[in-house]
Image (cartoon, rainbow, N blue to C red; front, top):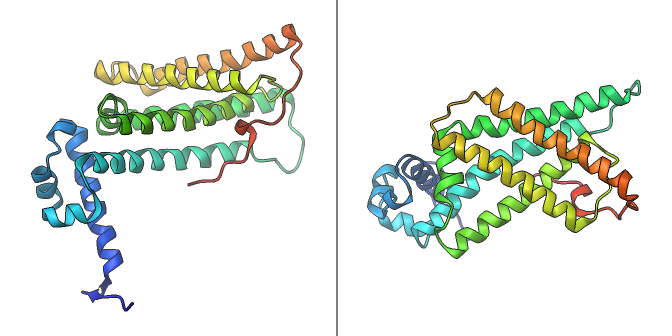
Length: 242
């Protein structure tokens, strides 16, 4: 089928641009005033488009919210993945000492936390990903659970980078990862709701204690319990950017 061209732009590109305008409108409205303010009229007004174009890409304001959430979390996850890959790839040249390697991987944890809390310091990102996402609908709840699970895998990778000799059963690893993500999210939510009374550096330094402390406790428990190394889990599989 021949593509229709208007002003030098084909139909597919124009549709994608209109969809992005609605997503950007949703980020602004929901991030500042909340999901209840994201009416069809408000979204169309902010995007500068008619209702017909809204329904071209979305069947409801809830599906728009899911697109907004995907846009924000995918952008963050892509940068986090790049950071993890950069700090966990094999190094050429002289072999590093154990202390040097530990310092490097602790730097990874610090940089990952800094990336997250810098995002949360943006009230728009924080409100959408930490507040508005909760209790909206079963569909949005499921998306929240999926996002939490994905980030728990990444956090577990960071823990393994700090202490590569950790040996833990797969189910326990999933629980630990979820608990770590939960503690960081809770700290971030309280920080945002209190109006950011602490610096990003304070948030990073204190959450870093949780990650490094957990890594060391897992190593200690492995030696005490004489845990047999388990097969490679999902946490050890290479991750590709979405």
